Image (tube, rainbow, N blue to C red; front, side):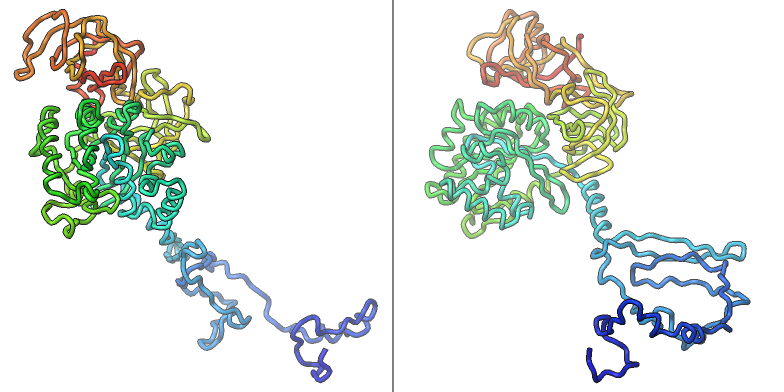
Length: 566
């Protein structure tokens, strides 16, 4: 304690006060003198019952209240300080609404029966407002599902990863981390593909196994990338991905030797293009990749050679080269012609870059007012049953009661996630993840369909269909068995009856009850499935009425459902 300090001066802390010790406190303090200092003539406190309700002000806004007249209260002089100022409390407000997670409160006083009643309007913080605006903007955007197809090592995952980087979905630090890890495994050129190939097995072997998913946005549209596997062993996975696609991107390697291998018979370039057309993809973008390779060096001659060989084949599969197909030379490693044009290295190409081109494509024109149809692609358990799939028709809302076909189980929608964002509504074209109640994971299989209770989809085991035999060495007779891929369902099927042969050009029946059919022929046949399948006729609902036939690991034919028999 400072000996020079005056006895009546205020102390800086309690430590500076001498401890009188036990029993001495009562001797040193005169209680009578303390009570004599009280103001016994002060007015009694009278509460103001007409005062407005107290509303705390967390923002910078000062609530305005009307003055209340009371006989027992006196008007405060204009120069008198507020209680907060008298007590030395400064008016402090948060520097931003987001820092404290507070709400700005505004108070309006309305007159009713001569009494004031406060009305509180709550304004949400900017952070939550921006999130809601972003969700509304995504809902209004058109959703387009883009599938990348092509032969093994054509560069599908690399292009997809680079697009994610160019559109801000993957930051530079993450890519640098992938690059370091790839160098450690002597896979320097694979680091971009790791943005989509997240599986350890896929990264080590450099092969995509499952259909990778990612999304990016432009000013007009919301795109979902479906990275399909290129190896022939994983074609069933590719078919499941193609069933969800609206736009197909065929990636071709321009490197000498690789293009020829992928395009020749047995390569996946041909099969993937056919499967994309069968899945209902109407527009095809062909990316001639690896144009920066030393064997190519952005050669216009090599680009035109690849284009010349591809056009007749695509035309044969039903694509119109002038309207449905567009060619772009690109480099997946450097990103040339993906988001911006590569004018310096490729002066001979005058068309748009890839992202601006797909952004400028016309709207798909989906019907949002039709009945709900959502084929299930996958399911798992995570604090409840989670269902994944693409909404092919109609829309779905949180809290809806829907029907799961073909087991006819009522299901309640608890949560909707569209591209990992929680939402209250999803419409046709969106890939969603649903948390449901009323059904267990073991009771759902890929190929099941969520429908409206009042408008369920059809189920059958026997149906008539028109089929094109694309590639099969021997003849096909009644009793032939194959594997049927229809929307997301996979089922064994048998041809029980050959009904008629159809002319390719006219579409008319040329022969009744043929004994067999062979390659390049179109026929109408009756099929019988091993189990019950959800399907519709092609004329009623195209997405659930087209199918692919495969046998011994090869795609042998394509077809469309004409009639549901049983």
